[in-house]
Structures are given as C-alpha cells and as structure tokens.
Image (cartoon, rainbow, N blue to C red):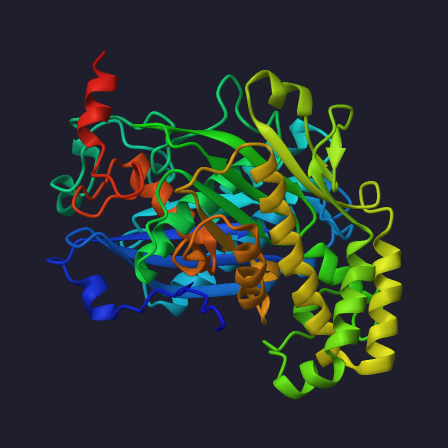
Length: 478
C-alpha cells in the first residue's frame, strides 16, 4: 500500500473580510531574500479562530537584482555569485513588497499589521558583519516601501496595539522573551554563531507548526524541521516544557544539488541556472518507472556517492558553503548535521556531468525522477544521522518545506524511506510537507512578538498537551 503524504495548504480569504473592522485579521507580510528567489507572502490570521489564511504571494528571481553602481559597496554574494549591495537589496525588497501589497488591494500603512524580513543568502557569506549589512538592507527596503517602523518591532505594551487586537494579546500577562512557538534558540549564543542560517531554521520550524494545523498533524514539541531551499536549514527540538530547546541544526546544500544536475543539461545558464527554470511539477508515471526504474536507481546511487551527510566535524568552519562553528555548538549541547558535496561543493561539477549524461540519454522526465530519488534519500540520511545521535524521541514529528524537499514525487518517496527507519507505526501521521515554511514562520513570529496567542488552538507546548500560557506566566514571574 502506498503511503499518502500530507501536504499543508492554506485556503484564501476574501478582501471584504480582510477590510472588515469586525473581523480581527492580523495581516503579516513576510519578505525573504533567498539565494534563488526573493518572495513577499502575505498571510492573515483570524484571531477569533487562530487560523492563518493565504492572501497573496509575489516571487522574483534574486539573480535579477540590479548590478552594483560604481559608488556602492558589494557586501556579499549569492551562492551563484550574484553581487549584492545594501542599496540594490533594499530596492529589490521594496519592489517585491509593494507589488504583493498592491496585488492584494491592501494599504501598506493601514492594512498590514506587521512585516518580518529574513534571508537565506547569509549561508554563502564570509563574515558576521556582512550578515549585519544584509539585515540593514532588508529593513531599508521595508522603510522605502512605506512600512511604519512600529510594524517591524515588538510593541512595548498592549496599548501600542490596534484596538481590535488588544483583547487577543497576552502582553499584559507575558512578554516576548525570544521563544518562538515555545522553542528557545540555542542557549548561550545567538545561534548564528553556531550556524549562519539559524534564523531561517527558527522560522521554518514555526511555519511548519502553523501549516501542520491544516492537515491534522500535531507538530508541536518534540519535532524536527528541514527546509530544502538552495541551502539546507532546520532544527531538531527537545520535548522540554514550557520551552523546548534546540538540540540540533541542519546545514549545507539542498536545492543546490538538483540545480547542479540541471546545469549539466545546458538547458539553463551554466552559472545562474536553477532547477526552477525548467521544473514543471513533473511526476514520474508508472510506464517510465517500469521501463527506466533500474536506470533511475543506478544514477541516483552515482549521485549520492558524492553527497556526504554526517555530524559536522569539529575542525570545519564552513560546511556545504554555510559558515559553522561546531566547537561552539558542542559546548552548548547542539549537534550540527550537514549535507555537503565533496568539500564545500568541490564535487558539484561531477553532479553536473551526471545530470548532463542522464538528460542526453533519457531526457528531462527521467532526470527529475533521479532528482526525486536523490533528495528523498538525502532526507532519509539526515533523519538517520539525527536518530544515531540520539536526537529523535518516540513522539518526534518531522516537517519538510522548501522546493527541493516537497516538489515532484519527493514526498511519496521520503515516506517510503522513513518508514524503513522504523521510527513509528504510522509514519504518514507523523510527517508533514509544507510550502513556504519561512513565510508562515514569519507570520508566527509576528504573533509571538505581539503576544497574540490562541490558547484554544496552541502552536507551542508538547505534542498532545494543552496550552502552556500558565507555565509561561509562572516562569516569567520568578
């Protein structure tokens, strides 16, 4: 019997309802500049029911950012080498944000309640200062677009919130203490010191918690999140209460693996091309599997020979292009699990050659079938290492987001391989696939910053347990 993956998808919401003064919709804009795409996603949470709806989504290719002007300072590059300046990034952010708000027929100043910005590009950066410049550029872009500064920082008191949200806020009982959906970042550090894209992992985890609500998977603590954008991020969470700890982080390559294979076909740009350029949500039909199944498995094995998945060795300061500090991680009890191709991508060209060979012999359909097989086994191996490191509990749920983890037939194959790990009896009830984990996570973070919890439909706390508001109040009043 084939396992049926659970995909979270939020329904839409009418403009009339969003504009209604009687309906408390908390509208959040999530702006994310990634290595491949730059997105603005608008979501709206109905505070009366605690459910989040999709409003609109604008996606641009990050490589289309304008080139640096002569007087500008290049502070970093994307994984594909696209140069970025503070000014060019802020313009890209401003354009994307305004386009999304306009397409939703909303007003950026009066209708949008909060804006959260994030980036995955930091994975390819060299120094922490560059990350700081990027964060500033994101803020600049939001301000240029007309976002009021108070819509980007936590309110000081309940009186600073719009009246229609005041009765839903718990700000008079608890303050925002850095825990997002009841998970603390790695203690004793900002997390970024351990792995450059820790914030992405935080948002992806929170976003999967929200998405799982729509498919009846209880994705509260303990859980494991994996975000397969161009680079890999994610967290492994303990079962502690009221706040769980981050006990593991994922890092390294994700979508960069299929991107390298597609570059070898010469159907996309050899430097800037991505799998997204040619992907058409291709699913492998039974006939292809019947005729080419053996070839697909053989090629997947050849690709996987170059993919290294392991606990990040202590002597590395970069793993799969992501800046890491395994020693600092060890000191605070966090296990780093990485995915590399050779040494920081040194074997990516081998994947391109294999991609080219598959394409010339069998075409795009078989190539995507090989990619699905490869990525499903990457997920399996990441979970296997986490299990071997003692980070998986009997009640741990797994959440997967990002283009290289949920497209095509990856979800179906992933369930098949995870079932082989023997984690629990009903694997499909314990794994959830979510689109736009980062954007959903931004909406959750905005609610946490404003203490807009829904006690009757909690995102935090232990799996199967009740709301932890009472425990939080006790903890903060100590």
